[in-house]
Image 1: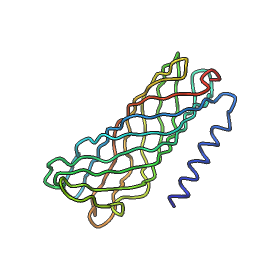
Image 2: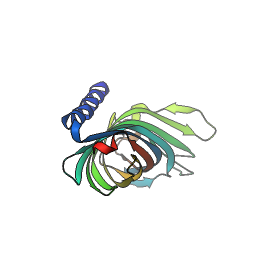
Image 3: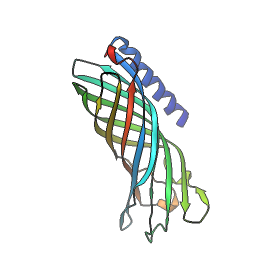
Image 4: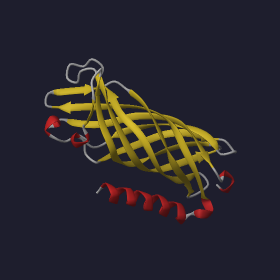
Length: 203
């Protein structure tokens, strides 16, 4: 299932890019993630502590009109959260890694951009690390896909370099298994980073 989703993601990314080659720009992006997880249900509601990670990947900016476009992306991101000293989770952290495909609808004006859209993420790994203890593979406690929404803004210089910030809001429950029975788990986080478009002049 994961391979099928990844294949569809690549085909979608290429398809969007090929559809408007004359008005598309392509680039790379990288930066920092600040992720968190919210557990709710079974009489509890817990937001864990923000965990810092990184993201990196590729993107395309496909023009629809002078001020509007579509920005498909394909990137890797580190998610998860720190548990701090919470009595439910002890003192440690949960490390999640995803491959993500967002399709963002974008407004552009004089270098400034604002964007929003849906995102599908495919889980690559899930690890639990207690302070002073071993790292445990907990991938079987999480679903293979995560659906979320993205909203953000950025600025791109005329030479193609730029920066942006965004927020990821989890829509679906990513938890499963007996340990999370009756509990809803959602990924949330923010990202701040830089990007570069190779053929900015063709925009």
